[in-house]
Amino acid sequence: MATIARAALLSPFSTALVNFDHHVSSRNGPSLANIILTDPLRATPYTRLPYKPGRELQLQICESHRPDLQPSERLTATIHKMMSMTMSPVLDVTISVSEGTDIRAVLKLYDRRFGKDLRIGQRYAAPHMPVNEAMFQDFVRRGMMAPFFRELEEEKKAELLPSRPGHFLDSTLESQGKFEAALWHECSDHFACETKAYERLRDLQGKLIPDMLAHVRVVPFDSDALSIPPDLQHMASYFEVKGVLLGLIEGYSLEDIATSPLGPSDKAQWQPIIQAAAGAAHEINKRGVLMNDASPRNVVVDRRSQTPFIVDLAQCHFKDDLAELWHEMEWDKEEEYWDPDVQYWERASSDQNPAAIGLVAASRVRKMGVTVDLAFPDYDGIIANITAIKGLTVPIGEDSQLGRDR
Ligand SMILES: Nc1ncnc2c1ncn2[C@@H]1O[C@H](COP(=O)(O)OP(=O)(O)OP(=O)(O)O)[C@@H](O)[C@H]1O
Ligand SMILES: [Mg+2]
Image (cartoon, rainbow, N blue to C red; front, side, top):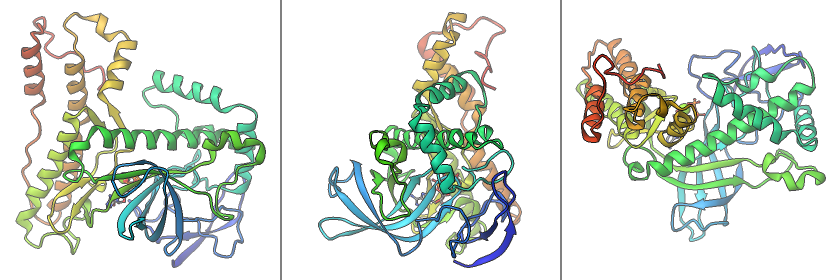
């Protein structure tokens, strides 16, 4: 890892000199929010990154999706490369399975301690430090987790844009415990969302999304691990790191389609690839999953087949959860022609997942002088179809259910 710049990071807690490491490519180039803290000399108080190339991690399988991975079995994952660390550490690994076969896979970890975009405080990156851990342990010890999570859940229901963990961070040491707790909650949500989405999209695995191989947890190892004080052993789940093992898509990011050496040399191929990526988003929507983070960055194109795969499903909305929320808000009581399927497609039409991928990718290739024409879903047609099949009569002048989500 080449450390290429140093800068003083001013945080409410420290003015320590921090290494800015650009080993992991960032979305917008290096910035304060896009740094890794490497701490090679252990000179800073920051927690060392345990996920480095060459290292081995012990994983315990919590749920297996492959016959050769036995539930509760322990596996060794050897890290080849850190692929990304914006919200989650995403690692290219080799897994040695019991029968002696090696599997090349992607290990995505939901570890609140690491993630350059995850750990944004009020204004700056707020890297994890052992002192944060002490504050978090104290927060857990005082039984604050359950009431705090209830507060977060209430806020989530009430607010269109619930607070990010950084909202809880101020200059008091007390706020550190809350910040870590909010990060734990967010990571736990991301794991739950990603695993639920892969389950809902089972038929798309290996075709439009990677295969889900297993849900895992990292077995604590040496001093880099999260240590659990003896009196908090019964709360071990707050200190464990969960992850998913996914099939590796060897290829390039859709956002690099115009420049990647792995992309097609024939520019005429760009159009069908971008169209297929937009189509993949619609297929996901059709299965009741709306992505909150649809973008070409979250699409990897397989280098051999040139098939796009949508890889990031950690931030989604599910049709059944939305329907429950709409029911709680009594939208279904407001008009007799109200229908959750129509409402879902109204929401899909406003979220525009296919366009968020297709139009953004198209704007990239336009810079290279290539114009691509894309077809997008006919949302009005989908809604008209549901309305006709269900015999819903919409009063004249009220042709759209709402636009309440817009
Ligand atoms: N199964 C996979 N095969 C190949 N590459 C992958 C796979 N999963 C993830 N990646 C790569 O790692 C990057 C980060 O993964 P992912 O988007 O799931 O993590 P994230 O932390 O949620 O990222 P972000 O917040 O930046 O969207 C992806 O953009 C992609 O380049
Ligand atoms: Mg992503």
